[in-house]
Each structure stands twice: as C-alpha cells, then as structure tokens.
Image (cartoon, rainbow, N blue to C red; front, side, top):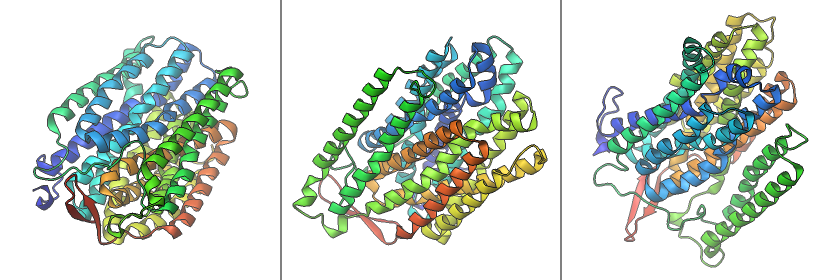
Length: 489
C-alpha cells in the first residue's frame, strides 16, 4: 500500500510516481499559463499594443480561472483527477495555439481569457496527492507538487524570451508560445497513461450531491453564500476594466448585459447551494460527519494574499525590472524569474514546516513575513543596486510561496470527499486576489500596488484568529454506508 512507502524523492514508483507526474503536469500548465508575460514586449511591438491593452491582457490571463477552479474542483471530485487533468491539458492547448497565431488585440484577448482555464489544473493535483499520501506527509507532498509546478512560470520567464530572440522576428514569440501548447498535449497523454486516482484497494470518496459545495450547519450555509460574492464581484471588476471607462474594449450595452448575466449566475449559484444544503434546516448532520466551513473561509482569505499576489507580481515583475533598472527583455525576464524560482524550495518548505509545527502557527508566522516582505519591496527604486533588489524580491517570495504551501497543507485535512471543491474555492480566491491586485496595479503607482498587498496580508493575520488546528480524524461514508476514519493529525 502507498501509505507505508518511504518518502523518497528519487523514487518513481507508487505514491512518488503520482507526485512526480502531478507536479510535471502542473509545471507545464504554468508554462502555458504564463507564456505571454515574459514575451509581452515582443508581442506589443509586433502587434502595436498600447500599455493599457498590455495590462488588460495580464488581467484577462487570470480572470477565467476564478470560476474554472470551482467548476474543475466539482468535476474532479465526481470523475477523478486522472481523467480531468489529462482532458484539461489537451483541451487548453487550443487557446494556446490561438494566441500564438493571433493578429490583433481582440484575438489575443479572447485567447488569453480562455487560457485562464488551464490555471484550474492546480486543483486537480491537490485531490490526487491527498489520495496517495498520509496526513503526516501531506504538507510536504502538496508543497512539492505546488512549488515545483509553480516553477513553470519562472521557467517560462527565462527560457521563452531566449528562444524567441534566437528564432528572431516576426515568428519568434509565436513559435515559443506554440511549443508550450505542444508540451501541454504531450503531458496530458502521459498523465492519462501513467496516473491512477487512488492506491490499489483504496476507496475514492465522492460528494453525496453535485452542483454546489456541501456544508454541515446552517451557519456554514450562510457563510458559504457570503464567500461566493467576491468571486462574482471580481468578474464584475474585470468587466468594468474592459468598459469605455477602462480600456474601451466593450461597449456600455455589453457591459450592462454581462453585469446582468453575472447577477443571474450568482442567484443561480445561491439556488443550487440551497438545493444541495436545504436539508440542514430540517435535519442536522450527524456530529461525526460535520466539518467547519470557517476553516475554508480563512484559507480562502490567506490564498487571496499569497497566491493572488504571486500571480499579479509574476505578471508585472519583468516589466517592473526592465523599467526600473533599464534592462533588456531577456535580462529582465531572467532577473524577474528569481521571484518564482523560490517556489522550488519555499513552497515545499512551507508544507514541511506545517507538517511539523502545526498548520495555524505556521500560517500566522508566514503571513506576517509576507506583509513585511511586500512593504520592503515597495521601497525598491532606481537608487537600489540590482543585486539588493533581487535579494529583497526573493526574500519576499519565500514567505509568499511558503504561505501557499502551508495553506494547501491544511486544505485536504478538512473533508476528504470535498477536497477538490475546497481546493477549487481556495484556488479561485487566489485568482480573485490576482485580478484585484492587477486592477490596482493598473490604477496606482507600483509602490501603492505593493502596499495594497501588504495590507491584505495583515487582514489575513486577523482572519487566522478564527482558524482551528486540524486534529484527530475526519469521517467519510462510502456509497454502501460504511464509515471510514481518516487521520488529519
């Protein structure tokens, strides 16, 4: 059985094979997702984009991932991570190719918006890893999965500009982006052939009802509704950004239609949530089956600041270094990749510390460090030496990514059969943060942008006061009514 295997990074058997296949798939998904950021200078010059259009593309890149992570979380819980991950990687190669061959801003915008769906791949691996690793190793395993996968953005930052410049214009950036689409198809096929949803003999627990997340008390029902609102509000914020008051990509009529549609979707989401959970008002859930949704809400808030800021900063950092220190495209990409480079160690480190020192205390320390880190980065200007700026960015990124690792060390310990949905909602909040921070970036100075992130981290520290340390066991009931106790501490 997988549960008694030694944790050996150099093994490619059993649970370690699953971990390696999963981080590789996630790595490629991030290469595809962030293939445009380091090439934006070439793309802008090639197609004559304005600065506002470039910033809009950066926001569009993370917008669709908000609903996508929620949807993919539900689909993963229902159909299993192996099929869903494979399908996602193959299907998302299509908008990648569309972006590579786009000839104007509208085509770029549509392709970039659709490519946001590949960012949902992260959620799938969280459920897969949780099926194969015991609680005492879960933080480390999820951290390696997330950290080594997130490194895909750094790999894209320092490799794609070199490749594009080596090929030369007018096709350099197009070939570089198209090759990432080919990588996506290849890893999708490999994952389908090589992965398995659970260890042999284990049960894959599925949600009792589909269409919305299950909660286990009436108070949690109302809290779930409240936590859904920011996801739709963020999409409304993006809609405003594309309106005549923003970059003038959408007409006022279309903006109002989209706003009405988002309102209807929110109401439909509320209704589906009521359908799945209305029994709570008539018949309480047995105590042994309950979980506290406030645990999910706190992790959502923390991921808003951690992963939300990482997505935003990864998107703008090459341009920031290029403008602040007068660097060339390839140089700026390589220097900016130092932020994402830390993922190789810091996110697994956050999970490892969480496994040994407790989930709540680890999150408290790392989130406070994140606030201090971004306050320091806000001070960077042309008077700094480039090496000192890189050190400050890397130090900040340690707390950001270790915090992400600590968040997802806790996610799978809340309710096993809902892990995909919990991971989906928490992951979606990361993208809510990204859209929010990138919108702030488009409206204020770079310094104010970093201060805003630091303030959000301080709010996250306050929310941790409501978190409870996972202990004991969670109970899951299979389709035959048999109860299984799963250790969470």
